[in-house]
Length: 218
Image (cartoon, rainbow, N blue to C red):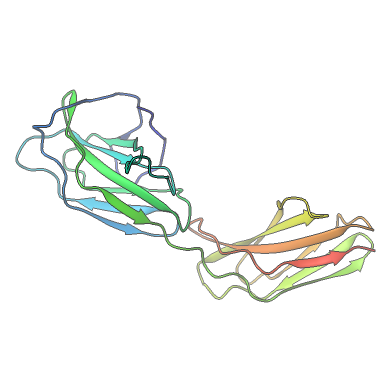
């Protein structure tokens, strides 16, 4: 079964392709607490104490996975080889997305049946930058200004641009929550430039896109 390489706060986390055989007599994890954030979900569980176990396997669905015959495909994302470990953080998830998780316990070459099934949703993106304006200042220059985001977690802003209705592309980043201007010096006359700003927090979460500024260059 495929394993996705993810970062975790737990030591003894391994990412390999080892497949355990299912032993239905092994104890299952039935009580698991979860705390979602925008792009990660933290888990806590009580280690199984009635048998000496080797650790746990963690399984997850794809984001917003469709249900086929009332079942979702769950893939192993991590193996924690420490019977005393009781925490795991699944990072780099999509914001405002649904995920399904389950855990199994490990002993030797065997793992238990799936334990509790958790249907979880990451938090929505932060609110967008509300005030955003732009103006052409020279034949090759457009200046953009916005109001600094009110959330103190913001560390930078992504500037995205669309040229003549094409797809959005990142063109630059502006560091610092209170820095609120950007000057695009790659303007060519007789084109339509559209811009939007996305605020980025220290933990990698980001806001909804700002209102769009459209400018026909001269």
